[in-house]
Amino acid sequence: MPPNTKLYRPPVADESNSHQATLTSLAADYAARAANYQRGVDIAQAIVRKFDSKNGQQLTGVTAVDARVQTLVKNITTAELKADVEYLSGEATGSPLTSRHSLAKGHVDAAKWVKAKYESYGCKTVELVSFRDTYGPNVVCTIPGTDLAQEHVVLGAHLDDRGSQFTASARAPGANDDGSGSSMLLASLRHLKESGFRLRRTVKVVNFCGEEQGLIGSKAYAQAAKKRGDKIVFMLQGDMLAYRVPGEPLQCALPAAHASPDASAVVSQVARAYVPEVVVGQTSACCSDHQSFYEQGFVSTQIYERNGPIADPFYHNKGDLARRSGYDYEQLQGLARIALATIVTVAEIDDTVTPK
Image 1 (cartoon, rainbow, N blue to C red):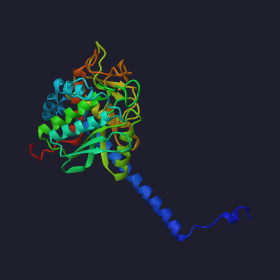
Image 2 (cartoon, rainbow, N blue to C red):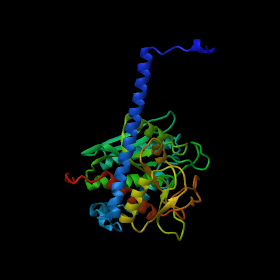
Image 3 (cartoon, rainbow, N blue to C red):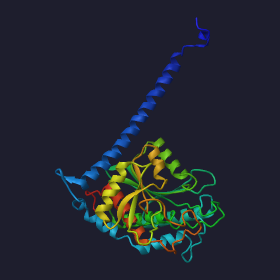
Image 4 (cartoon, one colour):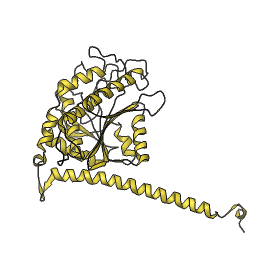
């Protein structure tokens, strides 16, 4: 008899049943998450095929352009982007903001300002969602879908900044990182609501907090969404959208890692179809809030300002202001248009509902 035999105690029936129930639950959870991810992949691949081919013949993408979306995205102006960026960076007359550090009062003030703006555009459900003591909230605007409302499309950017010293008391204007992304969210929601279009899928527009501390706000959101069983089929993040090296073309960079290739393929096709003046490429710059969704099994990707490495000389610096050389509102406008066109393409305009 082995010496440790007396240590073995066969499980009683209740323990065996409990263990089996746990395994069954885990298996069901895994199957549901796998199905959700596959649903996102299927949606993305169907969109790419629509732009890529018809009856087996390769197309340039122009035949898949929806004139309504084309008009919608062209309505985004550099003037509106400039006004929002400079308020958030504290450069605009009347702006009280000096820092949007995740732990600073300025972040809470900025979040309340964004919430009020979303509500003024007609978003009826806007929440300030706390996720950790001492941190500012995430700002979440929900636009309910119609017949596919259970499927969510998330458009995100981070509202926080870090400045040079990475302390709550120091200056942290963050005009590019990520005031540019936040202005993209504001413009996208503004024009989507003005259009009166109803979308089949529910859209969540989210300003995250805690990105600079390690994607904390987006991790909290994505983990909670997974726990709730949210069917997020697509997530797009906009981070650092406005710096352009003098002499370089307008660009849209997609992540080389920590993102879903199928999501990036959608953005690439949509960009070439609706904003052809922007050169689409890839960047090794890492990482932003889309990664939190990717890690939880959601189809996700990011848009960034430059194909290649980071070139902004004021990256993570108190000099990250809008009124400086290289801060380019046409660059920001191009990426804002791509973001809006992508979200509307994925969420789908409901043709059975008359625009208000």
